[in-house]
Amino acid sequence: MEEFDEGILNNELRDDEQFEIRLRPQRLEEFQGQAPVKDNLKVFVTAARGRQSALDHVFLSGPPGLGKTTLAGILAHEMGAEFKVTSAPALEKPKDLAGLLTSMSEGTLFFIDEIHRLRPAIEEMLYIAMEDYELDWIIGQGPAARNIRIPLPPFTLVGATTKPGKVAGPLYSRFGITVRLELYSEEEIELVLHRSAKLLGIECSEAAVNMLARSARGTPRVANRLLRRVRDFAEVLHDGTIQVSIVEQALQRLLIDSIGLEHHDREILKTIIRNYAGGPVGAETLAISIGESIDTLEDFYEPYLIRSGLLKRTPRGRMVTPRAYTHLGLEPPGTPDNGNEQLLF
Image (tube, rainbow, N blue to C red; front, side):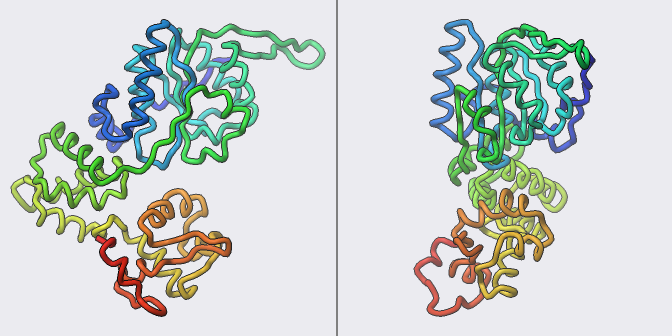
């Protein structure tokens, strides 16, 4: 069998990733938020450890930045298992997957990020590996080719995706545990910020934490990024302590408003209002207008705009809501919906 390219494992990490790793919890009790998910996973882990068997295959889905990779690492730690990480785009050839699978020890937790992007040939190899812990491999070519089955040690595949609908049915059905992560509440984000500030030795007032939580888009990754940037402003322009005044100044300079909208979020809303009279406008047309791909529009920008009540999808396309006009300081068409103003900030 050909050797696999070790580059498909994520060994070289950027500074931002190193920062995130420092803050990643190691146990389920340390993981903030997602209480129902944690409670269920604790049961599954305890049961698997009691049987001294590998944890069943786990499917994690949800918006980016909610902790899918972190949860996979926690599961490996809780099971006392080896943790191998890769992403679907990195698995270019069947030999890449074969090399990883045959190098695993018993109980290894094998994490594949963006699993919806697996190539068909590699996806089909996973079917037998997940069900029978065997690897189908063809030796030779032409009339002399023959198929052999290579036994694999029992392992746990953890697949993560932001697009569960694009995962093939036969692959999805082979996961015994399915988990959907939801956007965090402000209270849960505050818990994340308190923990991160403590680990980093940052002094942060309660009011400042509240303001950061409101601007974090319900996403721990965004919350930690904002904490990191506000810390920079606090250290350079103040005494290092994060107060409300520092948070306000930092958010203003970063072009982030009171509910977490960044410059590009506001431009999407303004484009729909200015160019398309508030909508409806098709996703493809809107993506071209703002210079983004449809995937980026639908996966990164729209979920939070919709959750915030500023944008809605209709059968005819995207439309802004009266609340969007109010938030942007514009006069909505027709009668203003004053009853929604209290929900803006």
